[in-house]
Image (cartoon, rainbow, N blue to C red; front, side, top):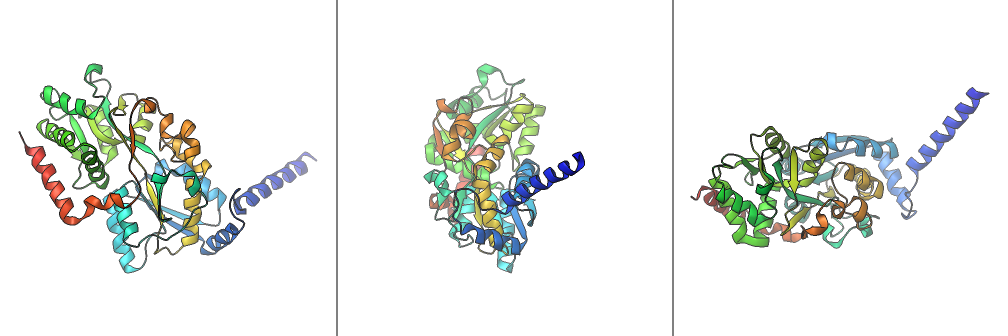
Length: 363
């Protein structure tokens, strides 16, 4: 009897799971069943992303549980590699279905160049205006750009609390921080280029003073957040400028040696932009993943990895304003839209990089 009851109960649970997996999400139009059916016929989903696969493994597991008929392939790479790979493959006619990158400007360039499918996600009403553009590009997170430092090696009195203080520290204590400062390389890192150009838009004179100070301090520049974090924790470097906050916050939860600051004068807020590829072999499967990623459940899951939620209805619990100290700083979201294209003109980009190099070398 107990065995039969247990088997019956298991079947009931399985039935509920299948029903949920196959059903139209609550609040979606009934016609969404057509998207689900079409995705099942496609049977696969290919994702190119800059987020490490290990960071989104639970998210992907949840999606696979909802849509078990889809074979999901996830390839992570740095932002510049992703952009170049996607463009090359698209020209050849076959590439990934879903593109998700922290290099906001490169994503918008792809959208502007016609690589994104127009699709009005049923979840778009929950997004702030700055996080969506033309039903093609969607911001999926709202993450702070922070200063990071080694809490064992940087005295509390030295910790810079705003951008001016960062430059002042390196200028006044040049010898103490010689070779101890790090940041992204804007020549080789898409996100590095984005963040420093955003700084210039907010305050050009102060930004160039900071770049000059980093040059005088012999700063080292990298393309990977992970490389910078490891070197700061080890003490090879002790202070980092313009780090993606989600990675720093998550590491801080495990190891408080890596501490961070939300700059008080302004804290840039970046969003990982996603779009369904116009070249997608499996566009309906990509639509399912976009909608899932913007849903409350997925946004909560991303927030567990410190990729704070972009949804307006989750800000107090899982959004950037839920972070300690976030309400005491000026948050400046980087708008998803054509403004991001300003610096991507080849001549403008080269001019900016030359100015960056010249300022770094100034004594």
